[in-house]
Length: 509
Image 1: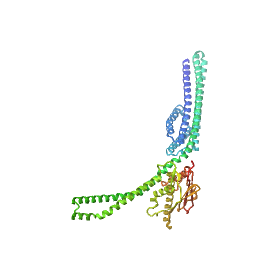
Image 2: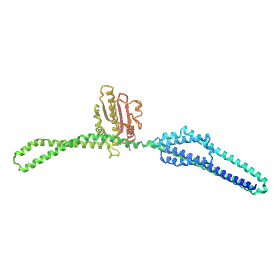
Image 3: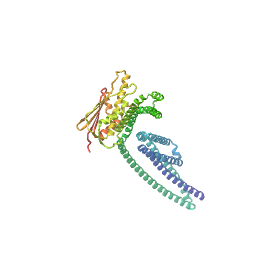
Image 4: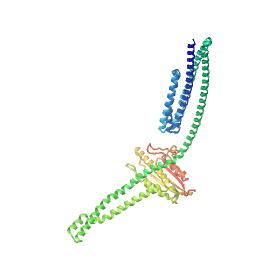
């Protein structure tokens, strides 16, 4: 009887130790699962908020740890994970993972705003709540099961004590051992409870810290959005490079003919020179005496024609060379890449340079007619300005006018309407210590709803790939912000479009 009692008490001791260890480990795993789930949620939301891949990498780093913690918890309490509530929790977790994965793909596709909406929408929060409630309920069920086991072992210990009382004389040592076991259990439970409270407190502090960091990140995002509004200045270079592409096309078109002309005539000059040298050599050999062979050679090469044509060819080459110099000079006057500072310039020179660069477009192509340019220049003084930026404005407005005129001409051809004579009038004048430049076309005009958005960044009525929507926005910035001037669009459907630019003659220092 003593030996079975000893065995029974020893078994109770082992079971109590197992219960203590399992309960503590399950509590730690539950806390770890809750913590890792918050880490994954925060990583996904920070990835959507900042667009930085480091948050996705952090997500990928902690995801296996969460899966491992769940598997260990299932091993310790398998029955809790086999009911319908567990299936709902698992389904909610899978949906959350799918939404978070989708947000990562949206961020990679530069769709951070959509990713943020996805992670803060009602469906995500509902699934998050289902998952959190399910985990909490699961923890309660685990605690209840463990408590039930503890109650069962309490009963067993109770009956052991009863048997011990009956056989008190023989089982006093065993009874003392059970008493010691009970004391150890209570002590271990207190230690576990204290550890649990400490873990909860630590978790709450971490959540509060992460919440504060998230708020700080949100404030940084707001600041970044404000900074992005000022980043429009950087887009000037992009639009400038786009215009320089048009400039290069115009220069290539203008230079092509004179260069080919010079190149083609050089061959003749070379041949003429060789013939003349041969003739001179023959004269030298004959010592300038009359010779039928010499006379025949002179007739063969048509010496008189060569003497008459050679100066003309050289003159043509000089004209072509002057034309090239003129185009290169125009290119420099237009781009003004070497003049970043404000200086006094001739506005008419900038307009003429821009028109010359656009000349190849003004001439039309195929069935398109030539666009007439009417210059009505006033007597303007030199104007203090950023010449390159101002030429950029002229290029943007004139290019838009040309596009509008050709598009309207195509519409007239489709509808078999009388052919439209396209023209652009450039007028300048001095008004109240300011220079006013008017660029007016006789195109289709602009509707009121479109005119209200003309100077908005990225707004364009052109097809995709043919316009960035930045030309007029940058022009507005150059005139208003850099030159303290004004730019206005006057237009109505069927009445053409006029852009009025007004800038001070002298800038305020």
